[in-house]
Length: 264
Image (cartoon, helix red, strand yellow):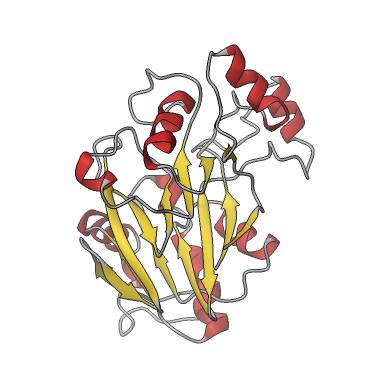
């Protein structure tokens, strides 16, 4: 299995607009690991390709990472940094000569159909600039393109939010709390990709680094990568920053970065 981190940033991206902190200044160097687009991953295995979330950077992400096929798109939740690139699915639909299956909660499907109604009615809306979507509401484990997929219900803001277990990989980019019944679905992982916004444990909707490390220590995946990262975390100094906060970073844990490829 090949996992490509298309984006590792929070909703604002990094660099932040009009910010001159050291991280943002470094992020303005094009190949810096601190340069972060909105959180998204792409997974491929045995010739099948799944896309997780489609944010505002989507078309640039798949172009830059040479993603040549998408069999289906899975959505974690309805916030704009995860769904606002949906219109750009027109290009995969056109190039692949197919309608695109999409998967997510009832809430996500309803919001996408409300905001992008022209993409859901193939008979009514036609034209070269329109991609057509086939919606699937999901709640529990299912199979897709040879993958075993389990939506993981997590708490994040006031919207229905999923992480996903994909075989022995888990992707949970937006979360403040993982209920015990959801944690029970996350044991024996090869890879855990987890929200760790900043060092601030008082943030109401995202895990801090310390909180994320507690989850890593509890679930004990072989490897863990933190995503949905804001500008207060600097790739160049992350372990030193953690030590300054009194946090010990496990050896199996690191920050994800845009363009990173993880092979299992």
